[in-house]
Length: 134
Image (cartoon, rainbow, N blue to C red; front, side, top):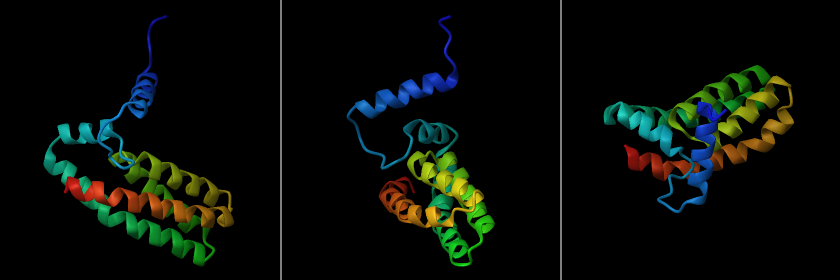
């Protein structure tokens, strides 16, 4: 009694942050960014740059997989993108990528196709913040 798990503490911090005014990070988890920044600004710039330039390739791979009706290719690209989102703290975009991965693994490419615009919007919304971190 009285003990909380790391996940419970993080959930409380995220909920608290959602209700507090402050500078927007356009879909990036402040705690994740601060954790990376604590490891060094060069690492933050490297991860940000890799994500900034790699995410469009992953999105293109998802679209190519859709065009080829290849759920495995879609799933691989979505999985890679989801992981990179989680590393950077792009939680909203990571949630969309995870949903795409699940739908692809179920062979539901029609549902994947419906989610691609949200993925592209999420990425577009992140660009100004990502560029400010470089």
